[in-house]
Amino acid sequence: MQTTGWRLGPHESRLLTWAQVRKVDCARTEKVAQALHLSGDQTTQLLSRMQKRGLIVQLQRGLYLLPRNLPPGGKWTPAPESILSHLMAVLGGDYQITGQAAFHFHGLTDQVPNVLAVYNNKLSERKTIGKLAFEFIKVSPQRLGGVEEQKSPSSESPRRIGSLARTLMDAVYDYSRFGSLPKAYEWIAQRKGDQSLLLQLAEASVKFGNVATIRRIGCLFNLLDAPKRAIELLREAAPKTESFIPLLPAQSRKGSTSTEWGVIINYSIPHR
Image (cartoon, rainbow, N blue to C red; front, top):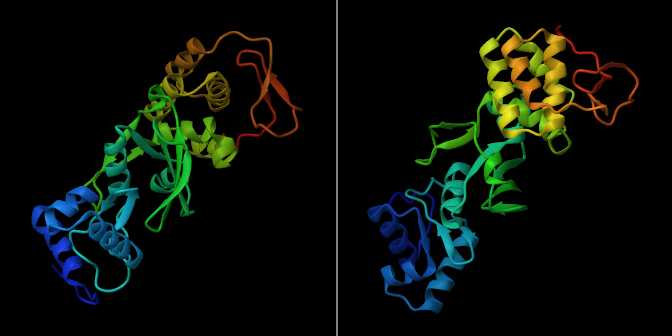
């Protein structure tokens, strides 16, 4: 066990050595007590002390992430994908990263998020785990999908993140949460020459979006002269309506109208 810059007590050293030798990344209090032959109170005190020192991270009460190797100095912070993978495995849930982290990952923005937004089917809360802040957004299992699994340089757990098409759809669908309109329209317009992407975006909108999202993206696709097949997919999924919604919510409703999509075009699309 590499401990440069760390001063470890005997029980702390035994626990971290055990985790390294046994390749244990996540353990409950009872398992630690059994492995180290400690009483329940001794184990609780040990884990509490190590958590406060930044040697381990508490996922839930009685459940801890353990490092394979300690960094030289400072406190240990596990990779977010390791936290999410272990937490959702314990909860029996599924998840995917969305929002600003996905926007940044796909090169849509240079802004690095302070909070990691996570669609999942178990939790609905803001939670700090270790030193990382998460916004867990509970959705139905049907709204999970369109995911890319990326190898993480800092964790054995893969990074589960929405594909580019799914991320663009989320930016329109969840605009009020992510503050992503009208920027999302610009991101799509900049990629109007990528017919494959626009078709994937249409498919993601039909599968994971709602009627308002389908109507807004359908109207946008008309303005961008998107591939006919992509527009047809959206048209087939959009019910006929006599009511109108604005292309850009929370803006003036003045503008021309698209009766086909039931959308007030109150925003001028750039890069047309």
